[in-house]
Image 1: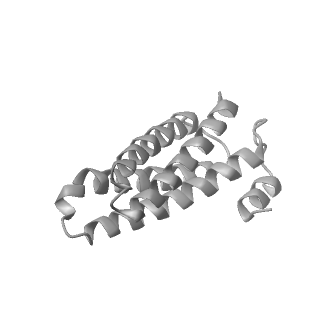
Image 2: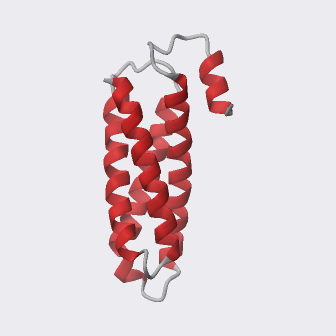
Image 3: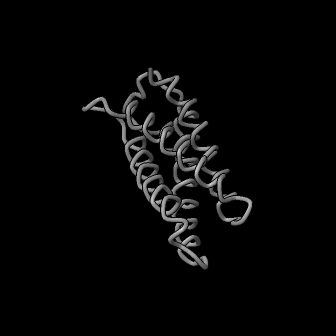
Amino acid sequence: MTRALDMLRTHPADLGGLDPEAIAACLAECLSCAQACTSCADACLSEEDPAALGRCIRLDLDCAEICTATARVLSRRGDPAGIASELVALCEKVCRACAEECERHAGHHEHCAVCAEACRSCEDACQQLRQHLG
């Protein structure tokens, strides 16, 4: 059991009928993806021609930020502004876009292949959780 799952299960506030395991899985994937994207952007900047990877770097950084924000919002109970579902959908969208871009470079840059994998996994976890959020 992960600490995120422990926290969700022991929190005194109601989860509103949401599956704590789906939330914890999405949280873990978001944080893993944020790390992979941050590292991929840094690796792209270290390549011989980083300018050719400009779109990849920007998507990596956007994806990392949105994944981090999503994990932070999902870590809190309650959704007073009703944004969790929209944020998870946005996270899913940016992960898909980042994966597609990284897949274009994966044949030449192994770090992009790793990042694309992390993005696809996060995209899937967001999609799974969105089904529960409604």
